[in-house]
Length: 300
Image (cartoon, rainbow, N blue to C red):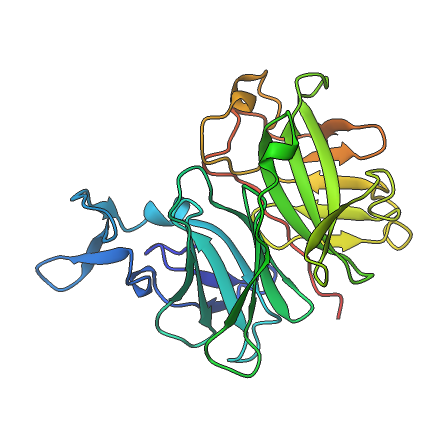
């Protein structure tokens, strides 16, 4: 979460333990601190844009960060945090105990941005809104090794626009891509398709939506996703995806269609329906600053 200075911290809501990550001024390529007469920080300015507007210290953390994922439990200084930030245009990392963030990727072309990132089998992966997949390997070196896994976009393959994308790491070892489409032929205006991302052949393999999760339930959103067995957790619905409110960076046609996505939803892959997972507080469609995150408490 972001603290009162918009700096990222790792927070355990059950013990209230805090582990600081580098400050927001550690994004030196795009954030500059503004200081008062007493040397105290009073605001921030985007150093990567020729804009003189000063953002107050608390508000910037609400929209500067898109997503943060970890390479493992934050109990060692070798644990890596990877963050999508600046409207999905940049990707940076830091290790626990670092004092600054290191930028690893920038998207400069218009119309594309990072949609999601994940840690899977020893590597970080990030997918863009156009479907391009890249990976970073942090093992054995302080400087990550970057690889473009799938270089071709897939937007031209579909008639319906892609609203957003997610990555899923499965218990059986596959990396899946979840595509969310705006489909006006569906009663809820949403259709979901799932691919297996074949990392060896560097291709997308379409899966039957009703069989892709093998009877499991998936959780996606602004923090790390997961897949759980519905046999171990029978209250969960098999072959369903639980979504927190997605963050859409552009005013999309979906936004104007009956306020379909506010609160936590569940999509049934077999029935192709999007429903409320449980009663929520309602309110307006919240894609600018989504309110919900997933928590996975340790049972040990």
